[in-house]
Amino acid sequence: MQKEYLLVTGAAGFIGSAVAAHFLKLGFAVITIDNLSTGKREVIPEDVIFIEGDAGNAFTVKELEQFDISGIIHIAGQSSGEVSFEDPEYDLRSNTNSTLLLLDYAKRKRIKQFVFASTMSVYGNQHFLPVTENTIPNPVSFYAVGKLASENYMRIFSKFGISSIALRLFNVYGPGQNMDNLKQGMLSIYMAQAIHSNEITVKGSLDRFRDFIYINDVVNAFEKAFSKTKEDGIFEIYNVCSGAKTHVRELLELIVKHSQSSIKVNVIEGTPGDQFGIFGSPWRVNVDLNWRATVELKDGLEQMMKWAIKQ
Ligand SMILES: NC(=O)c1ccc[n+]([C@@H]2O[C@H](COP(=O)([O-])OP(=O)(O)OC[C@H]3O[C@@H](n4cnc5c(N)ncnc54)[C@H](O)[C@@H]3O)[C@@H](O)[C@H]2O)c1
Image (cartoon, rainbow, N blue to C red; front, side, top):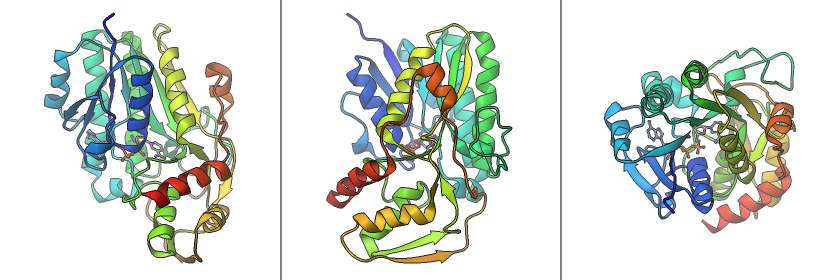
């Protein structure tokens, strides 16, 4: 039987490679677009058809014409708030133009299923926590502005028959995360520093807090969301979070506990657009997709540390 073609963008990166590998296992023929800006060619799972290029460029998207694609999971993107201040235009092209081009492509080709890697960053700083999908977004970085715009493009394109779901991912971590990228991924940044130099530099207060979510749980959320987009003309937003609030201070204690030597912690000024504290309610995703986080931070972090030390 002919396999269904599925586009999973960003398969040279942390989340995209894990999602692509999972959908290959489910029996899809997976195609990816990746510009290798933060991703690595060797991370792309074997058997994935690789188109090298910028997903925010119409010429790259045109290369999809050779395949009869039945669904799109758009994960590729510039994923650092800090970088979005250094190069806002690249951020816009990478995170928003790419979504618009892919949605427009989906509309022309009558591709009905679309899932997008959005972010908890769209909430910015909020008085009332945990944030729910009804919380009014208050982006404080260009990165978050672009992701929120992508969600809104999806909402409008859903009127043209593209069922779409935006997953607002909280702080994703786990084996496979890029330990060389010190501008994205709070947990991976601290862990990489602990392993390489026995010294962690924290940009911003130790009282900040986050909601950490393990990669396997995130992959599972993408599978459930993709199934849900089989329903006609829907547009949904879901928090993909654990609901647990973890202070930076507690995170550092866990990392230090699992490190094999003593670690010095330096605290310096924060980065622009960094949220002070956030954690989410996973209630809606639980009810609608029957999804919940299964891996606790202490267990996931231990797994990741073992993997990272081996690297
Ligand atoms: N990691 C997290 O905690 C987290 C949280 C919320 C949202 N997200 C979103 O999930 C997605 C994946 O994040 P990640 O942690 O795997 O990051 P990553 O940097 O490991 O992966 C991103 C991948 O996209 C590729 N890419 C970037 N811009 C591109 C472009 N314009 N065209 C084609 N490819 C491009 C990169 O080369 C890389 O392979 C991103 O869109 C990010 O915004 C991540």
